[in-house]
Image (tube, rainbow, N blue to C red):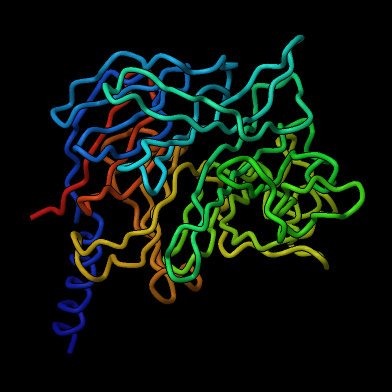
Length: 378
């Protein structure tokens, strides 16, 4: 009996170890300056944003190209700079893309998160027809909490509906703004690809409310992903503890800074010291201590086995790992298990995406940042 129990225990340990070691990182490119996001070009190249203000094409063989021309002025500094980038779902036809960045004020020291559209030139050397679709208001003098993840919206059947979501931080010292509808701080906004405001946004026509707002009460959301049935998932940084995964719904209030599972940096309580409050939405999942999450992606590929399909991936900046989160059901439900991957790299994971080839890719946040493909381990 004892021998049987020991055998079961050993098998359990080996299974857990195998799960933690089930991917093999292969570095495709090095020397990237604090890369923030990666997108996948049709011919196998990559489009990588660098926080300092450069957007580069990385060839399939890992050759890093020069910065693209045509970017607007970027207020690079602190957490600000050139941040997320995504391709339009019809990029192969229209060559359109979207990027967000810290936009400097026309005068003075203020800045805010902005979202722009552009076309990539046929020679992949410059951006053309750059147009700012949205600018977070008001601008403030801060280098913190820009948020800045973009997701293209889709219907429940998976077809693009012409809309975009953008996550926005509360700019740190403006945290109380997250509870007010007369500003964009600490919000998720929803706009058309042409910059228009959708008529069915929850606060359209409400006096004193900005019509772009989709949800409020967020702190600093740096990860966002869409499930196959069109549900938006985000995660956001808590203070000391209380990093959260949330599902923004139209008009929903996610509580910051009234409630939190974390504490202020001076060890005092947040809000009324509670983790729940009437009229606010509880997180789907929370991390205490904070992992400093960044980047978020669902796994839809069977490259890593069927058990991975429907899992959620989240990068950790603080503890330098990639979290594989298994849910109650594929693409939905609560987090039932977390496995830490890539811990041996010792790299801050800034972004994670699934490529069109079904493989997973991450970029690492450092002055010598890397673009890495994750292969199934033998």
